[in-house]
Amino acid sequence: MTGQASTSRLGLLQAFLACSIWGVMPIYFKLLESVAPLEVVAHRIIWSVPLLLIILYFRKNLSGLRTAWAQPKIRGPLMGTALLITINWLVYVWAIQEDHILAASLGYFISPLISVFLAKIFLKETLSRNQWIAVGIAAIGVSILAMEAWQTLWISLALAGSWGLYGLVRKIADVGPIVGLTMETSYLFLPFLLFIGWITFGNTAPTTTTHLGDKLTIDMLLLGGAMVTATPLMLFAAAVKKMKLGTIGLTQYIAPTLQFLIGTLVYRESLTTSHIICFILIWISLAIFSADAIFGNARKKAAAT
Image (tube, rainbow, N blue to C red; front, top):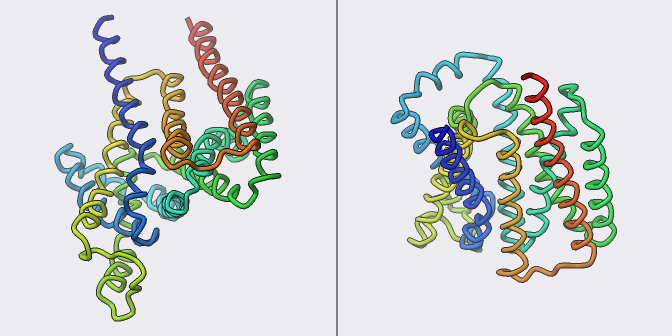
């Protein structure tokens, strides 16, 4: 019993660290404001491929990657998720650089609810009465925000929608998180490598932004994007194996909460009345959703014993 508690605590620490890294990412990408968002995403993808291959080598799981590549039912869906993750990362980096951190955090607050709704539509999963209430409250919050901050609402919806669809397709494709991300970034590796080569060495390279080789600090940050991508993913994947599903569900709100605090307290983004009402309704919605998931799992376990 003591061993189980120790394992659970380690899992909680790993999940907390993973979500904290995701939460403070706005600070990292703010340091790359001089680099165009598409270039940031391109470097993030390019340098992730060798790093992920090294990780799989030391975890003795290159065979798992080969097995996944050999299965059309995995290769096909992951081509779609590669596109979705590119859209998600690109919108996110652009939002951070353009001082829309609050809009980005809202997107990740509502993404779990979008995921539940998509699962209802495409996987025919049933929603409980409380889950429908949670979705309805969140919809009201988003509607209120749309009346005053409609110019940036698309950011939240694009992030929530792309991440929700990404999770849906990855649920269908039976592949581990590290192997899956390696395949996704591999699909994108050559196109983005050619793009970076053209931007960096071409005669038509824009002079209004910073490129690889222009400044050592920027170079290190661009290369470090791979580590920023892989580290929280590995920590969270390890935590999932050690923790209860309900607890894992609650930890996913750490990242957008930190983003919200960074946007308001560090970068002083304006918090309007509609923002406050929307976030309060979203938090109420998430509280209902999380409580329903935790007590629902408890009831299922009680019924099974």
